Figure 1 (cartoon, rainbow, N blue to C red):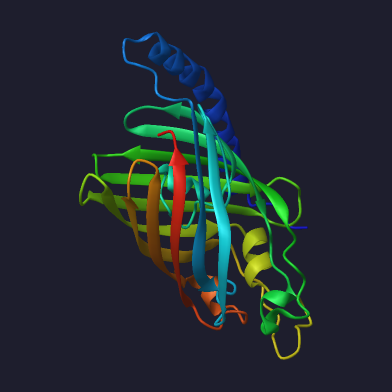
Figure 2: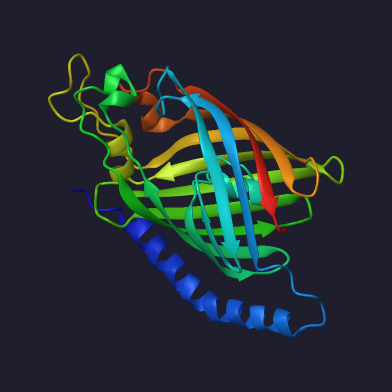
Length: 284
């Protein structure tokens, strides 16, 4: 098994220390809010709905997979549990990096937020596309993630997230960055435009875009190096039909870069995904 590269390991340590340092400040901020004169917001919120989506069968594939699946989220104070993209219904955005799981807000202010999360990465196997038959499966694993966001204005914001396979199943490490602009069309409707870039260490890139020595069928052996592997851009629309019901939609296009684009597994380097959802939410 390939060890994560040294820069990624250092980033993981720095992020963990930042989280630990931020926790007391977050606790103090929450206590101050509770002691203030403003009425306390409801601590318990939830959303329950469904999403219809269409996306590439795998990163770099030329097939499609379509699905109808439930999407939900539960919030209690600083803690949240959600399905993939389920937290979008709570007003946290429908971005491509919203992958669900269990998360906790470690520090938050009007402009800055810091959070940590755990999620299940389902991996990939040969049934996802014919070209993948015979290749080693990308094993499912548990990923830990530290994310931070900063809003320069009421409309412009940037974010970054670092995730790591914590079960040692060759999942490697990922770093994602993003920038977004939110346009409040009306009091009920907002449109968000966003762009981002994703990086992976050698372990992650080899698992998803590599071909082992000896090849599989006509595929030559390929061992990608760490670095930038994808850029993306998208638009998201969310409309509140009334106090409880919300409808949302999103479209996103991504393009593989570097060794990921040069991989023998990459048939179509540019992919797009679309999704539409409807949910009932309470008690935001």
